Length: 193
Image 1 (cartoon, one colour):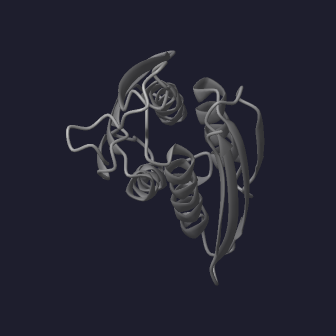
Image 2: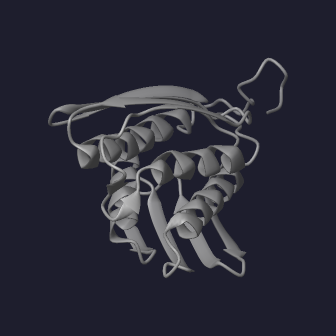
């Protein structure tokens, strides 16, 4: 069973995330940010992960702390669900088109956190949140999950670019964490992540 639940409570936010890597794409999301809920739904449905996220935060200030902490807690839940990473494929890439936009995500789930994010946004906000928070969400997630991610996207519509990125991340992650039948080894020349 590759499931995990993680929580984080600070003076700014309270976040709970539960994920099942072998799910069907069932979601239950309440972050207080409809656009973030929409993006996480796209991530989970196309990655076929069962995902629950409950978050409350200081949205009267802005969305930064909530988006950041959801990324942190989701990353921790992913790391815990993967455990030692025995038998996973580890590497995967996916390209997802959405109308005029195209996002490509390449992942290494080998315990080395790094993010390259090449997604230019035209406006300062999308869906009511600062566009810089899209990159910050993935930076927080990758750092906690131990994932290297290269993310690129182009297009004319900021909503389409962002949504294509979340979908492509989900599709690539599903493939990277898929288990190779009969393989119980850690996919690393070192023998560990």
